[in-house]
Length: 143
Ligand SMILES: [Zn+2]
Image 1 (cartoon, rainbow, N blue to C red):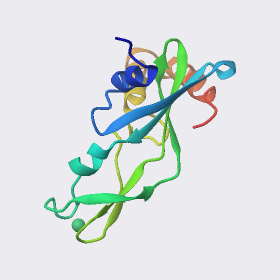
Image 2 (image 1 turned 30 degrees about the vertical axis):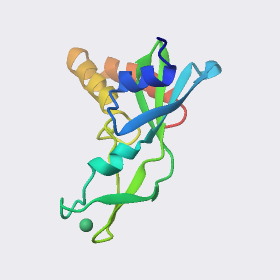
Image 3 (image 1 turned 180 degrees about the horizontal axis):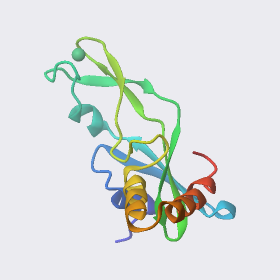
Image 4 (image 1 turned 90 degrees about the vertical axis):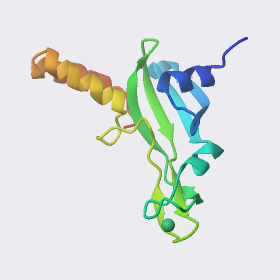
């Protein structure tokens, strides 16, 4: 049985059932792998209204496409790309943006990248850690 690169990256990112990798693109001149993710039908059935958990939601639309710098994969830079869905409550009509499992606290960084950055800062002088992180993020070019 062969595993597609989409399935492989979905497992690496730990996306679960609510999200799927639908495309990967390796941009060789930038040594970057773009991982394009979208929600699955299961997201809509697993979410409930934020005001009242009894009520189900539907897809309203998608927010503009965003990018998150993720940890390097196969020695290449890894960027997650996704237009996050906006959900609407079937009952009260409120609309909000779905939260993705990889979102970090900083815009443009995945939670695993943030955890890596924090480890670096603990283990080495801040200046050295800053230099490594600057090299990793500036080269990205999209975030
Ligand atoms: Zn509601």
